[in-house]
Image 1: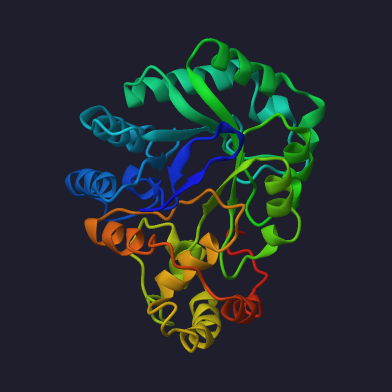
Image 2 (image 1 turned 30 degrees about the horizontal axis):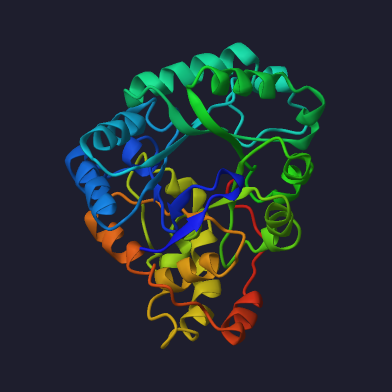
Length: 322
């Protein structure tokens, strides 16, 4: 496992982190606690020392599993979680006010609940689960996070940027008041390259690259007739003709496989890791098989400039979250 500096915090975190949404068992069908715990332990065995969860992932269930493993291990494991918006708007809407989403008492209460689920005294990184740059004018959210830091319950603070809207966090990044941003970044959504990632590098803000596989589209496992089980949120994400659209965009990528990347998941992860601003990539992992496959990519090899230039042509502007 290779390690990278997490922005101004200076923490050396595994460049492959553990995305823990799926193990919360909400929205995703098929996760079993025994296998989830096994996957978490396998990840730590492979050198993973950064886990990203959230209070809303199974109403604390993901945090409960993460905390159990962290307490059982001797290794230093960095735990990141998130405060859900009080009004439950994912993503935050243009008219949402700070008081609608993140009033101070809600931030503090949510953090206390996360610590209770994790059974830890402190969380390494607390993030707001959505963000709009207009909230910079009312910084009560920031005061609440600073209070938690002063109380020793939080070590660093960050935000999870709205889906496919990296430009909505530019003012925040340049302000210098946060330590990290979490953003969708993958072969299809290359928008963070334009301004957000350069700004993060300039202002020493750590970057958590989420959705490297575009919720499964970039694994190559989705066909036009793929069916998701009842209750699985991907049934909606890939609704109508979206699976056919995915196949149309994925097939040309397969022609780029070869000595630099043998599989689409490998190519997807290596693309994210190619940018120097990225601190860690956090693919969702629910099984030991996922862990083994994803962690094997962290071997120090980089994609060539030629292949990166070709991948640039595969950007796809869409929003399946709508």
